[in-house]
Amino acid sequence: MFPIGDDNSTRRTIPVVTYALIALNALFFFVELSASDAFIVQWAFVPSRFLADPIGDFATLFTSMFMHAGWVHLGGNMLYLWIFGDNVEDRFGHALFAIFYLLCGLAATFAQMAFNLDSTIPNLGASGAIAGVLGAYILMFPQQKVRVLIGRVVTPVSAVIVIGLWIVLQFFSGIGSIADTADTGGVAYMAHIGGFIAGFALTFLLKGNSTRRLTG
Image (cartoon, rainbow, N blue to C red; front, side):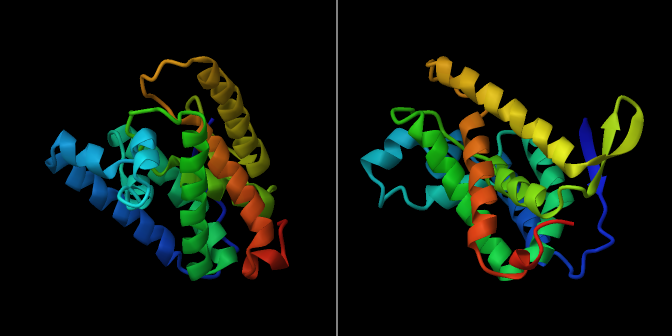
């Protein structure tokens, strides 16, 4: 199932933070395209390098969230952020949503690092932060209809099914990635899982419009 949109009829505000995040991710990617590999490695998050010099490498905790490995990586992430981010932002409020997004991204980065402490592979991408958005969405809008493409047919499916299947896939893939100890790069499944769990938990903890109604 490939999500292509959801129901925004209850949205009350313009999702300016979501749009800004999409723009920043696109901007960073265009900078990457014109930069050298050394630039990308410098601003991506490298676990072993960070642990050796946390203060000197602190900025990469944030810059890595806005970098992507290719057009497909960027496009997939921005599609999910565009579909699910606006509703979560509407419920949280703009400022709180921005904080929430960054916290989920940080949680995702540290979750991935915890399973790859000695890794020299650059970690980059918004997937972990967006996984946090999905964690919030499934709590806030479990019955919201998401339009998904199944084959050539577009059909509405409950968010709890769409996101539920996604996180199940991440858990199984994450278990497989733990068993594979080769430091060869690839999809950071543990970042996805860590970001999702952080988003789920932070939805309960953070104060704001989101706490008034968690179902709908």
